[in-house]
Length: 191
Image (cartoon, rainbow, N blue to C red; front, side, top):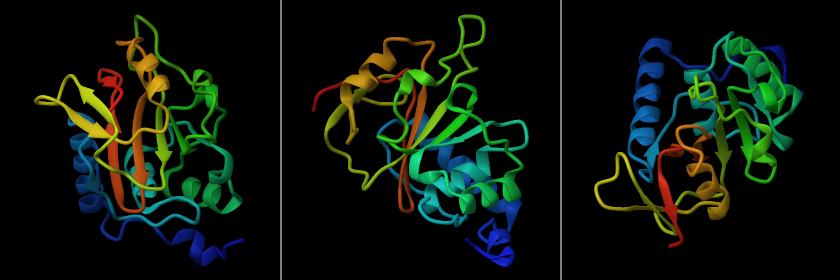
């Protein structure tokens, strides 16, 4: 268990500037599926990566429900997230954001995919990965000139998600200080 001093540590050192840089990086990878960028600024307790922690600090607030899946759901992570964002911790079915490994985030049909009236009321999953590589699945669609590549943990699941468009889930993939994204509008083929 962390001490009170370390619970309060790990946030942005210059919140307005760090959050602006992080938000731009997050939106860039979401607009350019398959692109990998560096994302730093926050340091959460283990097992969260620096990129996942930075996303959470940038995108979450007291109105944003967060589900911590599997190993990500520790007392230290809960305290850190609550202190720095005020985000309520919720179950998978009410989450705006969920974070964990691909295995821990299962089943993905537990998350909201939006409605025809409000497709934006869906969850975004932050998938913690061992590494991010620009190989494997072939990506095409909005934000991609011809094709892009990204190693995905379960190509058929992402293909099924893209068929739900304009409904569906959006994904960030994080590893250490790296981030990539896969919006629901992206088409996925085997690499």
